[in-house]
Length: 76
Image (cartoon, rainbow, N blue to C red; front, top):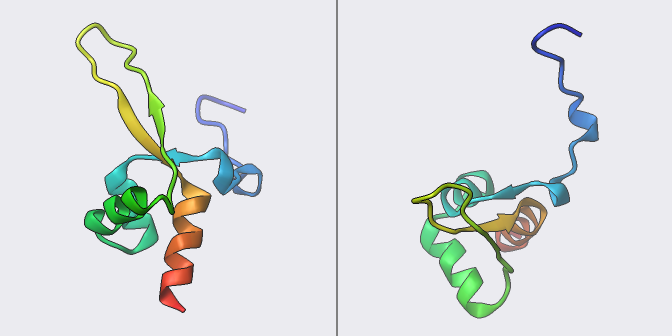
């Protein structure tokens, strides 16, 4: 096992992963403006993650599987 256990990528599912706006844009191969348009039109849902720190701010995150599905539909 050691200090750095190996990650089994077959166990990671895209619907379990939530990413920020920039990460969603990069992984989907689109711009951040496109992600904003998807949210505004209701095509992409978002979740609000509360801050954990004293001076932190809440963060909006998006489900990676939804982002990848929308990006794939746009490419067709």
